[in-house]
Length: 125
Image 1 (cartoon, rainbow, N blue to C red):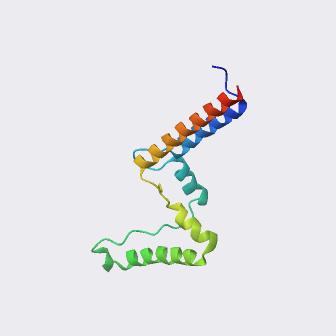
Image 2 (tube, rainbow, N blue to C red):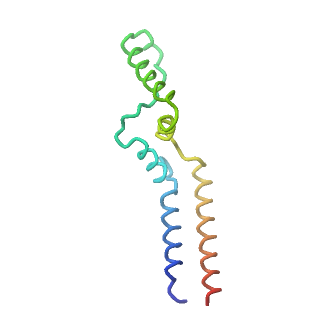
Image 3 (tube, rainbow, N blue to C red):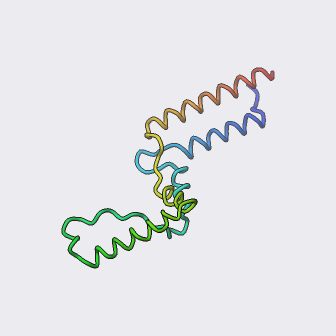
């Protein structure tokens, strides 16, 4: 078998990078989703909606006021719409497909790309 052509190398390296970037770990997020989360808020200044106050803290005025201030700030930014709303949503984005299904799809895509690359190389000979 002869060495791959530059086109074949590019497709093989591109497919490998795509698989590595999108491969979901057992726990956590893939590199692609982690990069999107970071890219929309690299400095960490966008607010995140806090969880509901636990039972018993509803009587603590300072805790309720701090919680409501964060929610008000988030709502103000969300109601601006446009890119700001999209950034708030993407900051907490997670994997769009279950990890086991994503792994199967990535492997299928890699196998199909390898077969297509091999067939194209066979035709050129």
